[in-house]
Length: 190
Image 1 (cartoon, rainbow, N blue to C red):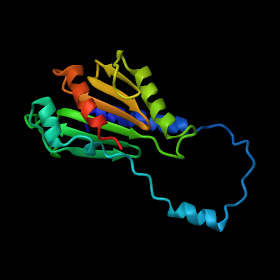
Image 2: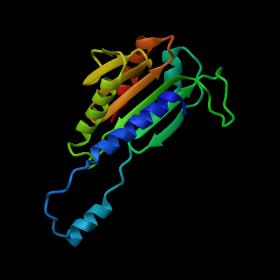
Image 3: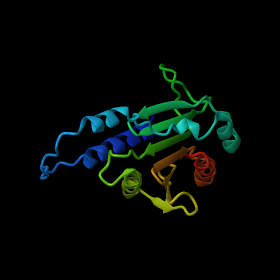
């Protein structure tokens, strides 16, 4: 896993811990749920975050970047899905992973019932926390509900509904490439 993906996973973990709360519970205990309520909750489908690899095909990435890329490599952790399109000219590690990617797309999906303020606020809070921690955030207009470019990490961050998306691009290509990729990916959001 490259250092940027590791940083995303660490940020996500920290945000989950802060959202869990640490204060005392001052509410009185709720009565036990009825058999009907227990049956309904058991029938709920488990939460599945949006798969980042569904937003852009290998052909999409090759067309937009003008470079040949490896097949998409997916990683998931809780609400975060990451899809990396490796550079075939990059050196390979013993485990087969490449050292550099042409593009990495990360999608955080807000989850109903997992955050005190709801899934949209969960995604927005993740977005705002990342912006506050960015070394040089530059506002980007016309993408999602809010967007910024982090020129230090070569990453475009986009907030839209219950999604917080990140597009990590080749440093040589910059914001123009990240914007083109984001515009294409956003059209495929559910």
